[in-house]
Length: 231
Image 1 (cartoon, rainbow, N blue to C red):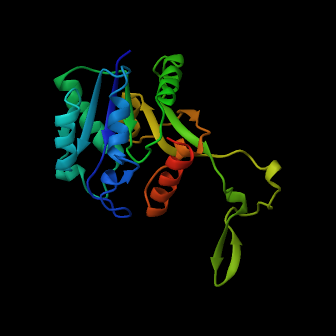
Image 2 (cartoon, rainbow, N blue to C red):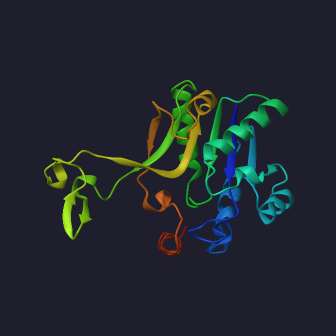
């Protein structure tokens, strides 16, 4: 089985400026992902795609066994979807090197993912004979059955005609947590999404591992987790 890991780290972020360089403890967000993957032998190659020269230089200097790719401007816009970048990289890699059985998308905004979690997702991928994508999810804390719109100061139930139930009677629902996407290339190309139909869930139950840092509040939570859990 041949797997390709791809780290996507665009320079500009609207909600949290230069977020990949922000530190939790003595490591930046990008360093958490780079250092973690440097300890693995799970992947045939590891690619870092960025339009940030500081990140590219860091990879070339400290992780020379990785492939550092300067991302094109047309793939670095606010409107650019992750799947567009992945397809571009996959097409380039297939032409220059070889085909792969799976593409593992790594986002630096999940700094506390564990090697054991990556290994479990890969094991699931093998179990389904590399024919199903594996997507990491977490159970939601706030159920949509309890959610309302406010229209002219009046509460309007978000889910129409659904009586509010006690929590023990609600369906268990999950949300993608950004921790990892192990994708079947043909599904990525055909469906043009990082969450293809018939994907298999990898359920993550660790609060700190589920953290996806996109705001200042998320960053402060990450710093608190770092101290509390001694990560």
